[in-house]
Image (cartoon, rainbow, N blue to C red; front, side):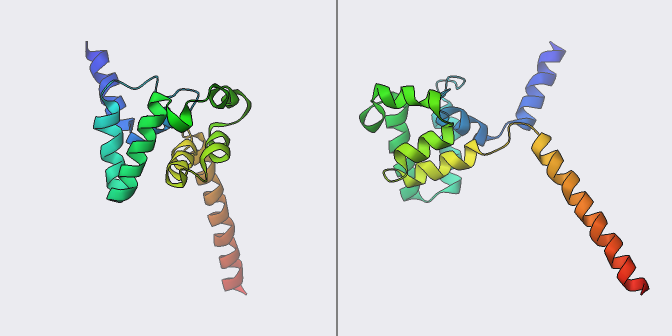
Length: 143
């Protein structure tokens, strides 16, 4: 029982609503990992914090269609095409002109690295750049 508590605490610490949004907006997953209330309790409250009321209402309407696969999202060919492109390309190529705010949201959350490896690489590079600059500054000061 103690292990489950530790796992739950770690999940609570690491979880961010953007993860739920990415799971929903990735057409490969289409929100399969989300619980039945996650859209209303996690995703919409976060979107309300980030976007204006009008944008939130628009995103909500589009996501309802997306979840139900109705209207613009009802074509079987559209869903089959995900096998041949990345999720970001899928959103951009199919919906940039119809739903630019939703496409921007999808691109943002789907661009977040899924592990800390990318961040670690950046920090390593920044540290290297800082050291190089630091070394150059000392050389200029000594002259």
